[in-house]
Image 1: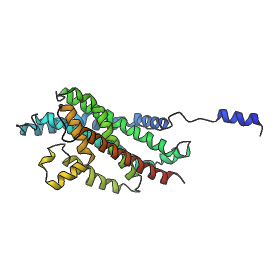
Image 2: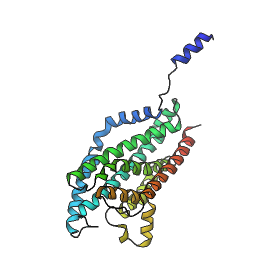
Image 3: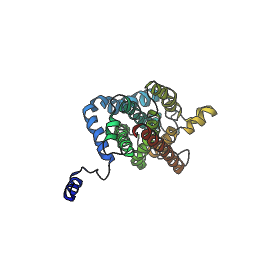
Image 4: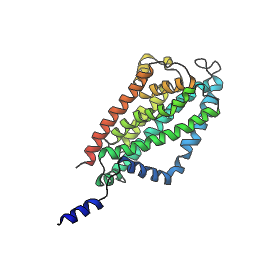
Length: 269
């Protein structure tokens, strides 16, 4: 083969973009464009119904309010953080398992000139996109009800992204370790539902017995709820802001490392 042929092949060979995870994100966005109608209710109408049911309905029976605020104003930040968690887990569980076991998209992406971190990073970027759009819808509902009491509410989009990453990365690592969706039912029943109920979303954690209280403190959702509530209401959090941020970042970092290891084990032969 001549030198000219080698040089011609080198110049015509397709090159990766500077950020190789972007084509993976683009794939998920294109796929979501075809299916977004199925998530309109859960992402945009459900926040309004949740606020009406819990904030207005249940709040009518909590006349004394919580922490100096009406129950509607107090519960809305918790519901917002909980929404970020539930969207992150939903987009990091069955879709990930399907890409491994059913439609096997990850294997097709691995056959392309993409690294494991590109495949994983692109999917997590899409998860954060879903978390952000759903949370912004909830934030608009909160603003419509006059529940935003501080300019620090502008920091909520950044906080929900951190909550989403702290939850989605470990969930992706767990999902990449299983072969059947029966384990996902266990995940929702024994992790997602207890966190939603006992992490300060609907009532103060101080009302729980000591054992359950410490379990709430361990969960990432309580830290997210405390940060979002303090930002929306303009009050001091129950714990250190830096401590909250570092704790959520630790969940995200450990989850990322575990997810990379699991993806590499399944995709790299």
